[in-house]
Picture: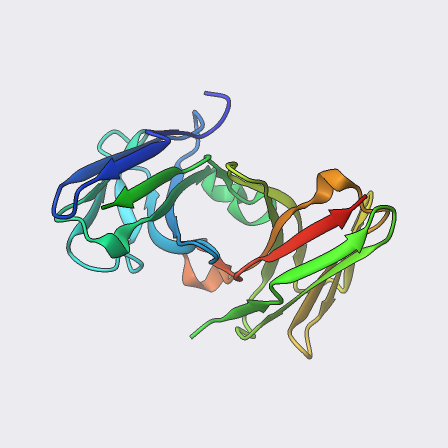
Length: 116
Length: 113
């Protein structure tokens, strides 16, 4: 597509529930990133995919968080047993790996997750 | 660990210049970026600078880099009301191999008409 698409744009869930957040990157972009932005903060790195594999998942806060990208395109961020502290905007971005530095990423508009 | 810091707020009058400042700690940072975030929108890349440069100009935007002090600034000339947004500084270290960014907390720019 023309841009990075994230769905849903808003998600309200109850504490303890499971949620899935979807990211559809720009066609042809092999690199995909997930970031989390809490209120009043800058985005924090969660995970980076190069193709289908997670090249760096060092930012995932704990084992309740998991992400997949089975066909090297769409990615899903999965959060189990949600907690109120998981409430944030989850941002997805994509880039062509070879141009990540000098062209930067293209970010989606994010999914605002609220855990009540 | 790496850290990027910014002042939280800046208010300027329309037509004046805005200067947004950022300091970072990772001396191996090679690429530094400025992103703009408007309400309800994703982050938009404004400009970037390599660590072997001291200055970069792009239309109304001027980026200054002081490597010795690890200080980065973004100057917006002739600031307009449409420039009101949150501006994030970010740094990246290619030796990490992951192309991940470390973002600052953002500076909220308010432009007064």
